[in-house]
Every structure is written in C-alpha cells, then in structure tokens.
Length: 137
Ligand SMILES: [Zn+2]
Ligand SMILES: [Zn+2]
Image (cartoon, rainbow, N blue to C red; front, side, top):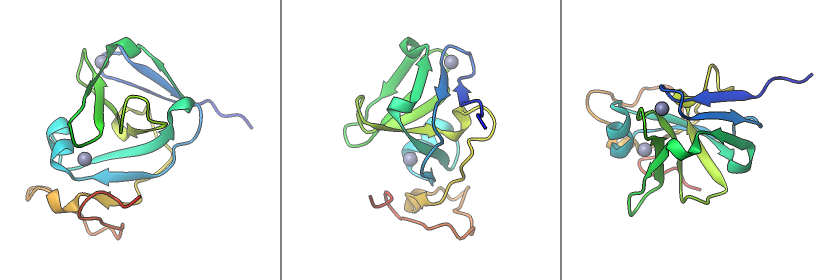
C-alpha cells in the first residue's frame, strides 16, 4: 500500500516541503533559544535525512547561526519555524512539528535542556526521559 508522503509548510506559503520517508527520533527542547524563537516553553522536532526532504521556496529560507549551537531555519517572509541543523550541509535535519501538515506520525520520546525550562511552563511529569542539557548522542 502506498501512502502519500507527509508535507509541511509555513504560514505564508513561501516555503513548502515534502517528506519522502517517515520521521525518526523526536523530542522536546526546553532551551532558552527555543523559548525565544517560538514564544513557548518548549519545542518539538523530529529528525529526518536531508536527502529525503524536498523543499519548495528554499530561497525564502533564512537561518540564524549561533556560534555555539545549531542553525535555526525559518521562513524569511512570515517567520514560521522550519527546522534546525548543525550546519548548512548536515546530513540530518530536525523538522519542527508545527511546520508539518497534520500528524507527523511520530511522538516526542525525550526532553532535553530541561534545566532551562521557564517557571511559567514547568517540565510535565509524563515519564519521558529527561536531560538537563542536550540529549547525549
Ligand atoms: Zn512563510
Ligand atoms: Zn532548544
């Protein structure tokens, strides 16, 4: 049985994506950078090989590259968050759940940077493995 591939897109429609394989490991990040870029207490992302993602409107994509962390990629027109990546040519990208149309088909299985969780959105007691800093590789 063939299923249509999952898709994703930003608020304004400038950036669209087709995900040609299922997503891999997914988790929540509670770091201060995710808090600022989303306005939320945490952010869920899922791994996928870049080779399995087709982007449309890639010229609208922008990235913030902190000197000591992964690049945060977003739509330069509407600001929707798209993904993170260690570098522009990393083999794996981490797609934001909110960028995916409908159900991404995976669920977060860990929480990282829990030490940075803000007091107004404490880490929930959901039994997921927690890491005070980045999830160990
Ligand atoms: Zn957009
Ligand atoms: Zn983060």
